[in-house]
Image 1: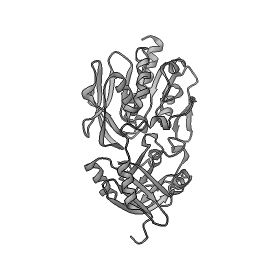
Image 2: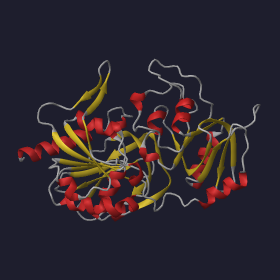
Image 3: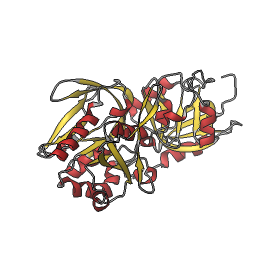
Amino acid sequence: MANKPTGCLALADGTVFYGQGFGAAGEVVAELVFNTAMTGYQEIMTDPSYASQIVTFTFPHIGNTGITPEDDEAPDPVASGIVVRWDPTDPSNWRAAGDLPGWMARRGRIGIGGVDTRRLTRAIRQQGAPHVVLAHDPDGNFDIAAMVAKARDWTGLIGLDLAREVTCRQSYRWDQGAWEWGKGFGTSPESKPFKVVALDYGAKRNILRSLVAFGADVTVLPATATADEVLAHDPEGVFLSNGPGDPAATGAYAVPMIQGLLDRDLPIFGICLGHQMLALALGARTVKMGHGHHGANHPVRDVQTGKVEITSMNHGFAVDSQTLPAGVVETHVSLFDGSNCGIRVQDKPVFSVQYHPEAAPGPQDSLYLFRQFADSMRDRRTGT
């Protein structure tokens, strides 16, 4: 490398990668995962599900379309940092309102470029998601032994409740709908929208927009809300959002809340961590995956119809389908590894999926899930 390295990535096994740092200077410890998406790096960085994770992008050109405020899934980036093959270039896109390195510097996030991401991805696939320390020092001074020791000492995501850290601090109403070309973001329907309470375990904005687009008037509550606090809003449906961390840890307070709603004949829809929360509330268990599923090209099969959906995923834990109790049906499975990707409660309007239908990688393969949720609320309203 012609220039002195200003970025360093140290793995807990002692492996070290050098490159050129960008974004904020400093050091962070986290779990390292890889994402196979070719677009959407800004949405990935601002997805709260990536809390305490550093993302390695397998696509080499990251940053080339710049930064656009409309693409944020949260007010600030949540992923701890990113690792890329090529140093980000100046943006070339009519929507760009800034560049990736400057945006990361202002938001306190670290990046490193010039890394052999193919080698790094192979290591993650073969050995599982490692604990790492990522550092950016403009002077290129790194204490490698201390970085490796810090990576080894980090306890990791198992047992870690991160939803409490990324959730909203107080309830609020969301009325922004889906984005349309030439129109921007839509608004809630004016005629009799469905009253939906969304539990925020780290909710992406585009999920809330999708709920609105299918007829919901959304009130967002913090992750720690109780069943009584949910029911006080007299909802016609309850949504359980995505989020980060160990579902078993978040379940300590989320599971009793969900169990308090299951007998109320309320439509319930969960995505990602919300899917795992629902499964735990029904009596199933979750397990830590080796390297998880992170990308926009994951094929999922609908068990009942045989239809294959191309989905977007971001999760390091999964529901153990072998522990699903009687009365709970597996609806979707991953065609990559056979892991559970969806469940439904028999004879109840209660269902969830492990993937992200709002992210539209298909691009609309999975939007029917929001329609299904809206239909279940409509049926309840009309008594059909």
